[in-house]
Image (cartoon, rainbow, N blue to C red):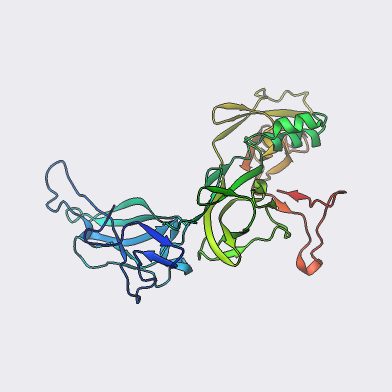
Length: 395
């Protein structure tokens, strides 16, 4: 993917805070006067037998879609009337013309998807291109900058979370709480994510003279909604130098952090957080058959996660033990958890000569994000809290 030859607007703009102007100015909208940026996907076609006559395949493109940070550009409200996609059957087909000026601190990753119709076989072949990134730098001598000191595409793995596991074991009476043990478990896998924030003016690190606002990005429209730390959400606290988030309350979110000097925005930083669910295996240990004298069946799971032994899988994985007597249409859910013990007769085994065997299996899935324990609005919206007035959460 390249910036179309002849375009006077590169991928990176420069913003002058003193004149409040962009260089180059892309015009803002398709009706504005400026120098738009043109981004063209280059589709190269070849065949080992030399049967592909046209090496450039742009003219054969169909079902063309451009994405901004993974979201279809046609669905993003902030991009309305700020782009055009060329649909003429020539070597420039699929070119994205960008009229939008990108605010300082915002990062717009562009990717392309489409299909190519192979004229020899009439088959549609999926094609992708990118990514490239549009951004803006600030050339002001008193330039403000905002950065976060973590990966801007942070992933949280609930199965690896040692602090979550520690609380699970304490709650189930497997270990006794100590401050030292909890502190040791609060490592880089923890759901307590402390995000250091650095705001600079020029090269000088600031700790006053500005305010911070945190916004959630709507995945469908790109619209921003401000997050208040006083509301019930994933934000534990936010100061001028650090943001603390509870990752248990997040499935996938995109954020924008904005720094303001007075009422003027001077810098912003985009970042995202999402859950990572890797491959796990759960294997029942008891492989023995059922003896005539057996009344109850006892079994326990062994777990592995991405190749390693997984202790206490029920901490992050919902596990249901299922049984069905052969010859019966009834499936019984025995219990949830890492172990099971159930009465074979009550499970349907041996009710008659057709139910002399029983199948046992487990169904499992990684638990979703936690929710705050509160009643519905129609029931009063009461929030349930502990003795320290901290809301309970569950999943």
